[in-house]
Image (cartoon, rainbow, N blue to C red; front, side, top):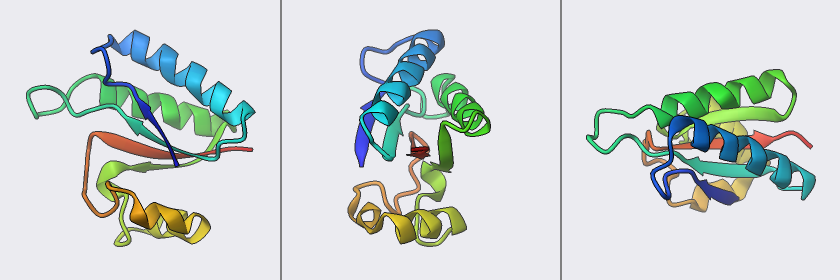
Length: 113
């Protein structure tokens, strides 16, 4: 699984969204199927603006057919349907450092071929 860190450099929501869209296109083109997006959870610990905006953008990518499955970090676990579905197709996710950590600062995306 590849990782895309959208927190780096503390971008604006628009900058983070543009970077996400560009990186998704590049990764799909290069054959990457699984991506962990690090968007953070706000510097105050109560939630920021980038995470919800990125997740909304990812849901749109599913509607466009560019992504297949989105698993929020809070559900990236063997205890959830989405987590089990992902792990059945990509067993290596079980060794990811965020597996079973309930991390709201990340979202895992299965990209469409």
